[in-house]
Length: 470
Image (cartoon, rainbow, N blue to C red; front, side, top):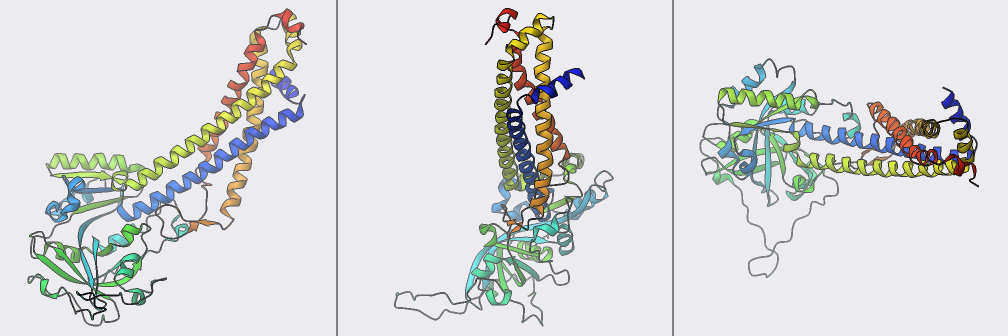
């Protein structure tokens, strides 16, 4: 205790230098805490956006993840209901799972022949009830902040769904879907001889419908824009279904926005498999908590192996490479900034303690002459460095918490990666106590190391040299 008291008195001998040192440490602590809280908020936002879209885990036929996107029908899961039931009834998985649902991925051509427009599309077939429930997932209680425009999928009519805003614009559904910044004007067309505009011929896919599947068009839907979706069945025959577009939903990524179609699972099966056996391309699992991914994956792999199924399991970071890349990039940036702050604090404390040792060299000689050992001298200066570090870190963390509060109530917005619309600029106030503790301890350790270097050099001076120092 006496060492701490003496250290406290010594740091007040040069108030200006001590204040500057404490200020540097405080700024480092505050900056690290605020940026760490910001990175934590980005992590949970990106995680939430991806989990509501693709779940935590997905089960596919062996080889689909690497090769199946070119021919999804060839990698369909036969008797997928059995696999679904196996997962749902497992006593280990049951408490972990929020939603388990089959999906169909497919590619084709979407045509709006009322406006003579067509575009290749990437389709996702989902069970509407499960899809809507997945979009309610909110482990981190931030869904209200994301301001995502989620269109609930129609649970009553399997011919309805939604498209990306870009696809709606390309297919000239601007007025019907109320797409902003989308002039609904005709595209210029030239005749074969380049003589000038020609009247487009009326074209549609009606003649390509699989005869085994009747038209899905229903009466009373004239107010809903209709598209014809064309795709090749698993047997290689062309097939067409009618698809009614309820809304255009921004996807955040232009390439996806210009091609995305979400439709009913049974309609997607009808389009992809025609008169053949109806299969699921994937089985998606959304868990209650992201931290359970590893346990759930191990359990599913064990079930697959025990049943001898030709299936594979992929987890969130494999399903969404962009999510993994953002996490890695932001982690690297945070590590770099933390390292810079540590170096600044280190050199600031080293400079302060070096000046202190130089000014007090005769005092060190006197203490050594009356019997104080080298370790006692070193301990005294290290205590001063520790005190400077603790005071600076404490002030910096308090300022950081205040700044976090001000940022969260400032009303500022920004558009993070993968978001379709601006969201509030927030930092993570909850769950950052461990980060604050790590910063506090780390800065204290850095201050001790920085003080130990000049203190050791001062303590090793001979008594005669120390007393004679001017």
